[in-house]
Image 1 (cartoon, rainbow, N blue to C red):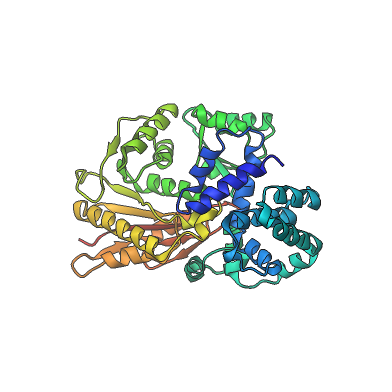
Image 2 (image 1 turned 30 degrees about the vertical axis):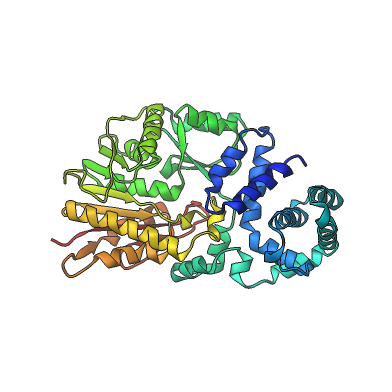
Length: 434
């Protein structure tokens, strides 16, 4: 079980610095790990975080000490042990217990050994009890804040929470400027990669990626972009005529997809961060996309002439709609963090509406929280600054592509769809009433 030590190290660092980006932490931590252990380490870290409150509930069943009072290093070891006993299925229980106990401080070995052995003996009963839990906060290890926000728009809350608590799939968007989807199909098939081809998106849905994915991406023959994110580019390509501003363009996949969908479209790709723009330039060059339209600027101040027929603002947000690939966000997002995002989103929209009063804005966020969606636009609609929205034009395209959605006052919520495996998004096409 040589994968245990890196899992313990990563979870310990994450517990010490809970606001760090888990994905970046994993990438940094796995650099020195053997390639064959990286996938298992990654899966176990994500699974433990995805099921954290369930695991803590199980631990509390066998512990006289409240879970939150257990020393943090011991709590991490117990979560790992409980997860392996309940969900691993292939490793003998005695081996799991011995490996966990061996990594425990001497003063706590008796406690850890006894708890895990009791869980092993009563596993069947525990699993039955877990099936009867009705509290969605525990059942899906998701904060009450996010559950209440999802409840506003969901027609089947339990099903949608289950969806957000599952492992993600990967959508490999073919760079049709350098390779045909048919040729890419053969490359994946020849390497034994199972996929589902989504023709409207020129994309391959892959559940178990192999090294061939890295090869394809490094050669500029494809890039990872979820179908929800692709929808934003599709809408942009349909709504823009000649010139579009991609306001928060990093990491560049939306601009890249816009170029593939509508090569004659003049795309200005903007980001506030010079480092991200440099990375985008490298990405565009690798994919053989024109790179003469990359700009560093702050959207909250005037930086562009009002010469666009569409502005795409895929604004920074809490990313609550991406919980499948970012399970750490389920317990990390707070009201204060939502307020901060909402204020920033409102500032960007206010500036764009002021300096581009005749240009429609396609506002999108990969979030379903009210503070980052309807509330942002509602506060900008004032007697002196009347706004209009065109949901009908958006909804027609969503229906055509098969997305589930829910209408709001100003925009549309993109809901989970198990055929498209999309992240959740909010989309609004707004402009000033002149």
